[in-house]
Image (cartoon, rainbow, N blue to C red):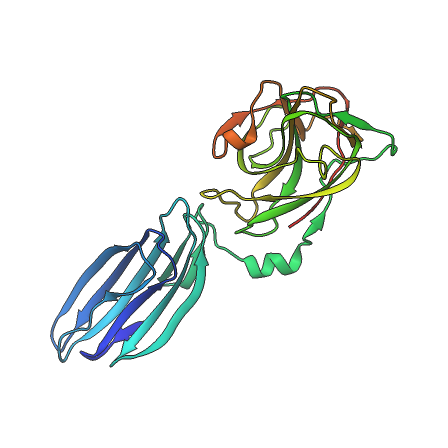
Length: 308
């Protein structure tokens, strides 16, 4: 419970960026004979210190019943702190905590809680300690080191790689091998997408980041390469999101070929998919697109390892 017990006590919100941030405070005033509930609402769109609950009148206690602060920005994260100002001296009540797009912090009967964009309780510090940040995708079954996959012109080759180990990812690193270097690229991209897998069916995914891989140090060069895919502005990867890695290339010269794995998929899990039409990730960030799943019992898909 938070109380403002004097005319020199206020509650403040400190925002660390220009993200559009809403706040809502529910409170009640108590004096010797009355109980008067109220609420205060507002929006801050600057890095600032804002009074979100004014001081009570004399001989009155102002009891804070609930607080909610939400980052409404579609492009900016925001570090927020709740503090109590007592005659010009500030005391931290909660925070600082960084809110990603759509995330919120709230105070109520269960105390302070930080929620992700889906209103799920964030436990980033626990998950990060429990899960590895280095992994290979599920369903990767290596029959030999001779498998290869052509990066067919315009086709998105899509590989399920598991769930995001924590929220607020800003990038993911992808390791792969080129066995035949491509030439004369119109474009060559690695992309990160999110979307729920569909057993025996085609998922819908949304591109959330990409990196240009048309250079000699990536699709245009032989050997092992690491590409870092940044999460694009306005996009977010939440803890537990299902992630996909997408290879996409178009060239008027030699087609790039990458080391691939034979994947036993007798149940047609839908972990290996493609988009046959020319759907370039970089021009479709934030857009939902439908995939086709590979129907063969044994499929060949790029062999990759990831770090986040």
